[in-house]
Length: 266
Image (cartoon, rainbow, N blue to C red; front, side, top):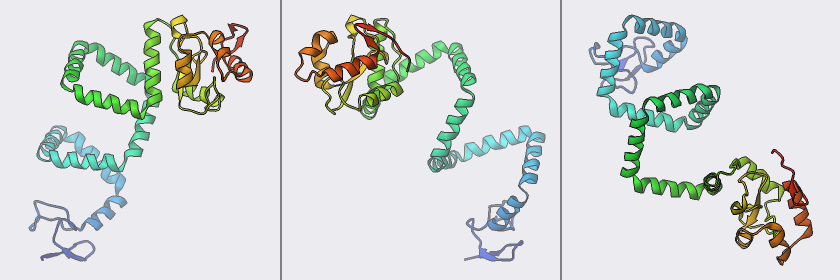
């Protein structure tokens, strides 16, 4: 194997791209200095090199733009692979960066998206319509997976849609739902059992019950199904699991005095 001596540190290395960068002008197609020496030089002259590159790009904009374009064209696969690896190695950093960027520029980003939509409304509607038609199975599978992995978020979205259809207030958030469950110690508000909980309308949707934190309580599937569209005072006292203490806690939590509710804000 051919070897090459670094002109900077004098160390002899195999004459390969593992130790030397490529250089078309070099006799052997490699640079004179080894990668270690070049890295050290760049570290010691970081600011000066950055300023030189900035100045060079400003003075040679057209040439640099054409050169970059040609490089991307000739190295498309390499660039894609490198970007993929970078995203994989810096996933947490990128998520935090984008989260921070969004928080600091929320209004500007929203305005930009709104303006882009208004300027391209017909095109975007047609694009999304065509995309849904061409990817029905993929979209269906993705939605199914999302529902399985995020049952509470999906439940909130579904309930909001039902409330909006009846033109009722629909403001319950996931954070409010978590607080509601905590208040009832993650147990059914009616029977007190620690089962998988569902969002139950204290005042049924069919009787004007809104989808807000003032009207939603945690209930097991059995109680939710049994109560259905019945009114609480007509249904609950007749149940075998009726509890005066649970009834008092539930009514106090929802802010009821008699049959009148004193609304509160979480």
